[in-house]
Length: 277
Ligand SMILES: [Cu+2]
Image (tube, helix red, strand yellow):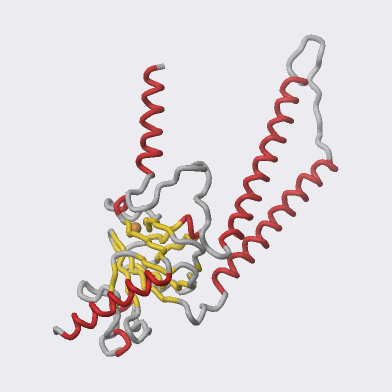
């Protein structure tokens, strides 16, 4: 019993203490469910997830109840002979048709959400953030004073060129880098996602976003709009090597004025650095 208690307390310590990221705001309620969604459209993913969860629960209860009823009513008893059943075509028909229909519904439903997420045009006023993942961290790049992010290409990645920028592209001259993802609340954000080495994953449960960063590719479809300010954590969600556990970056969803202040400061610092060269 003591041993069990110890295992239990260690497990809960790991679950609660270990999962409580130092960078992000702490969750105090509803710990067994996904964190509250804070993006426009994220509730569509929630309704799909909730539907699947409730459906699974109902099917689980139904099948277990039938199972237990059969266990009891067909148990071995004196005077009762085993009865051989060759099956029931009507039952077979329905328990094939109903799951097929449910799976088709889920396929169409989820594909529609996926299509909406990945195929909708990027908002023209979206803030583009270039995010390059590596073993073990995240490099972020924002457009400078001209509002234009200089072209980046995975083919140009090198130790000196962390974003694969084109030195000939004038739009890239004033871009600045950041170690944290700072975004204004309520504004569309467009993420360019790349990897310099192995597969990493951009996973922010509160945004209902999960996308792998695949070496050699630039993922261009990710965009989202937040609905409230938050302190979150960007943690890699693909086991990418020994330092995977520590592959984190801070996410700050801030009021627009605060973002503009931060952005102006970053632009000024980039200009000062460029001038001193
Ligand atoms: Cu990683």
